[in-house]
Structure formats: structure tokens, C-alpha cells
Image (cartoon, rainbow, N blue to C red; front, side, top):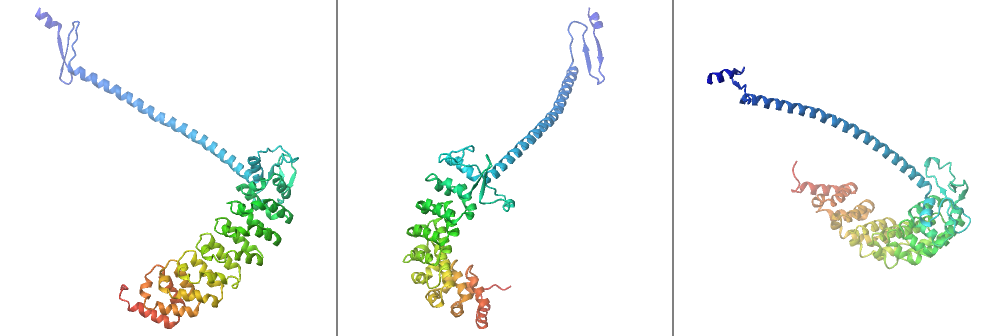
Amino acid sequence: MESGNHQNDFSSVSPEGSGLALSLGASISISPTNEYKEEINKNVSRNLQTQRRGREVPLQLESAKRSWRSNSQWQNQVRSKEMTISNKGGRRGKRNRFQRWSKETMGTSNDKKISSADNITPSLSISSNKRNLKKVNRNSFSREDSGNTFTLGEALKMLMIKEHTLLAFVTDQEGSRFLQENLGSATTEQLWGTFNHLKRDFVTISQDVYGNYIAQKYLELGSDELRSAVLETLLPHISSLSVQLYGCRVVQKLLACGAWEHKLLVAKQFKGSIMKFVYDQNGNHVIQRLIECLNSKEIGFVVDEISGYSYSLAMHPYGSRVIQRLLTKVCRKKAQSLLNEIKQHTIALSKNQYGNWIIQWIIKHCVLERREVVVQLIGHVAELSTEKFASNVIEQVFKRSSRAHISALAEELLEDDSWPLV
């Protein structure tokens, strides 16, 4: 039996030298060598699957890139269409400022006609293209729905049908721009009519961010009689307007465009309170324009009121500008009190951010005071030459002084031991 069993079993040797024992019976036994080969086959199949997946991933990326490109191209086309539409709308908006404003404010539509006070809104087209300004009559506006033409006067009449419509139009951004562009073609009667309509609210208009430009237009374009009427309306409020951000511009325009008697009436409103306006960030511009537009005799009261405060004003950002305006405009006799006070503080003002400009002005334009300033600077040249603001004063002294003074200043610099040797 044993010999038979041995005959039924056989052994074979693998090329690697490891034996593989197989049984011819019902049960088959596999050696570790066969298990190793099976693991190799599994690994090979996994690698093949990974390679297939690796090929699929680039393909998926390529398809994603193609779809992204097509989507981005589509988005760019949509954006370009939107930009084109918005640009067209912007140009159309500039042409139809009056129409758009009337739609939003008065709630009217394009198909309404001007037959009564309830139907007052035309469809107006205003060309803002600079190339076509010569071709377009700026005194006329075309209505798109019917082709009829309305003059500026008719448009202003429509705005004055209701009580507060013109006021709302003047203080609106689009309305203000419309009037600024077209009031230049208005007649004297049209300017008078609209002013009388707005007269009750003209102070409010002058203080408005958009309305102040229209108030200035009346002063620029109006006759002397119209300016007198504007001045009569604003005169009780000159002080409050002068310290207001937008109102001060109207007061300055009144000083620039008004007749001589108008300027004198405005100047009287500041007598006794010049210092208040000089220190104000808006009022100081009005005082400077007042000095610029009046003769030296009429602004003598300004010198009288700031006399004794020249030193403090010279070191103030607003006051220093006013002093320079005064020194430029008034006669020497009137300015002497200011010059005498300033000369006493030459060193301190030379070092100051704003005062150094006053000292430089004296060195440039006043020969007698220049000598006195140089005498005060001798002994401080080395110190002031290293100062940020005073160095500008020393530079002007070297440019404008006599040879004797320049030699004295140069010797002081050369004898100073604090200067580094090169």
C-alpha cells in the first residue's frame, strides 16, 4: 500500500530549484512558490488598472479644459455684450438727462405730450459728443418719439409749471449738469424768469453741492441788474455762506463778477470779524478773493483788524496766505505795521512751516527789510542751514543779498566746526 501511494505521487523541480508537490487525489496542495506567482499576477493586474486610470485622468482633464475654455469664451462674449449695452446706455443717458430726470422725478412717460400741466415731460435728446458740437444747435432739443423740437426756453417753462420742479431739477446732479451746459444759450428774459422762480430758495441752492454751480452761472451770465437782484437776495446771508463749503464759492464768484458797488457791499459784511474768517477753512478763501478784487484803499480795514496778530497768523496755514495777499496788494505805508511785527520774529518764522514763506517773500520784494532780516540771520546761519524750512530762507538770502552780506554769511559757515569735513 505504501508502495502504491508512492507510485501515485511524483515530484517535480521548478526552474528556480524549489519543489512543487502535486497530489493526484481529490485534494491539491499548492506550495509557497505558487502563492508568490499568484501575488505577482495580482500586482500586474493592479498596475494595468492603474495605467488605464492614469490614461483616463489626462483625458478627463483635457475634456475639462475644453469645457472651461468654451465656458470662458461664452462668458467673455456675454460680458462684451453687457459692456456694449451699458456703454450705449451711458451715451444715451448723457443725451437724455432731462428725459431720465423727468421720468424718475415726475413719473412721466415718453408717449405723453405737452398739452397740459399734468402732461409736461417731453423726450429730450442732448448730444454730448464734442465732435458734433458745431453741427448741433445747443438751443434746441429733439424729441425722439415725434421728431418735434423744443427750445431751451420751452424746457424751462415746463420745469416751472409746477411749484418745486425747477428747484428739484437745479439741486439734482443730472439737472445741474444739464443747466450748466445749456444756460449759456439762455436769453436775459429766461435767466430773469428762472431766477424769479428760484429766488425764494436761492440761498439753499447756493449751499447745495450741485445747486451752487447754477447760482454761479447766474452771476457769470446775468446782467448787472440780475447780479444786483442776486446780491440783494444773498446779502443778509453773506457771513453764513462764506464759511460754508459750497456757499463760499458763490460769494467768491460774486466778488469776481459783480460790479464795483456790489464788491463794496460784500466787503462791508466782513468788517469787524476778519479774524474769524481768516482762521476758517472756507472763509479764508473769501478774504483772499476780497483782497484780490478790491483796491488797496478798500481793503485797508483788513490790515487794521489783523494788525497785532501778524506773528500768529504768519505761522497759520490759512493766515499766512492772507498775509502774503495783503503784502502783495496794499501800499508800503499800509503794510509797514505788518512788516515791523514780522521782522521781530525772523528766526522763529524762518523755522516755521508756513512762516518761512513770509520771510522769503520779504527777502525777494522788500529791499530795506531784506537788510534787516540778513542782520538778524547773521550768527544763526549754520544752525538755520540745517533746518528743513529755514534752509530755504538762507538760500534766498544768498541769492538776493549784497556781496558784503554774502561774505559775512559765508565766513560764518566756513568757521563753524559742526560742519563735517569732506
